[in-house]
Image (cartoon, rainbow, N blue to C red; front, side, top):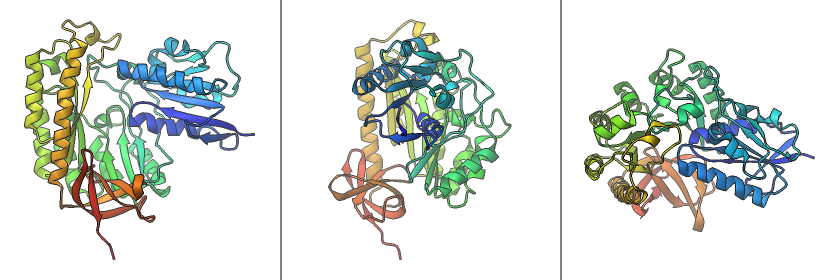
Length: 433
């Protein structure tokens, strides 16, 4: 009988792409993939370790799965397993711990599925900086996350990802275009390019991200191509102009700002000033007035005074952004920021975070209202409650229309009408001949 195997993914879209690749390594003739909410013989948990909260969520998730499936073989893999293998193995009921490189060989490590007396750990201290495992997500016929880059050379003072993922590297453009063709042939309409630092693409092959985008837009049958995130110093005029002129490329750009105060950016070891960030936003708006523009912000970084925070708030308030992703600083063991003076009290971090989240909510509503009455192509994904269907515009506005059975997985012209709530709009389907 086939063994039932379930996969649970924590963290970024890159992890989702890699989980799909890990799942495909289990032979279909021997294993049946089931939902992580159901009972299974094997559970594979692909983890994140970007913040202390992420570590905590990993531990909670592992314990919850073990509690509901006490006899299952449990493998903890990925970034948390790479950085804190002994801690992962100390959770009662864990059988196998695999780091960043080893996780792709899980099918061979898990040949013996008997519960272990003591956990088996395979997590090398040295990352394979030459190897690259291609990955893309499958199972969703509307969108696929395609991994085009891994690792990071930036070494920001608060981040452990270079230790978990290694140096920046990528495959040849020809390999990625072939993967994109296979994804499109499977019926997927939109590809989202993912990586640790996507804008750094080409560092190991002598190419650049603009070269990759120009190659991918030629993929026959590809309806949409979207960037997941890009550093502001790597977002060139050429890339912005390409996005504005290519219908396949979505006018939705997410950039990590992290702080709107140059002194704090220096302490973070970021590679740009806030003036460069504002220049990039202005250039996007100049060429694509209705583009969706998002930013990441960290509050409560060590040494951030009330004045520094107010400087960040005023800067963000002055920019025509569509939304923010707000994070409270989380000290990561082994990083310079964890030992910096001026650690900010948790309650202060929380207060600052809440205020920026409110700013984000108001900006998202303003952005959606400005789109009222405009026509957009919407990729419809899934039905919701009360006979409704939702999807996303090119600029990443979630749009809701009455359900029609022929709509899921298709791109249709829609007129945006009114706000449905603070995160979605109602739409009116424009009939096509």
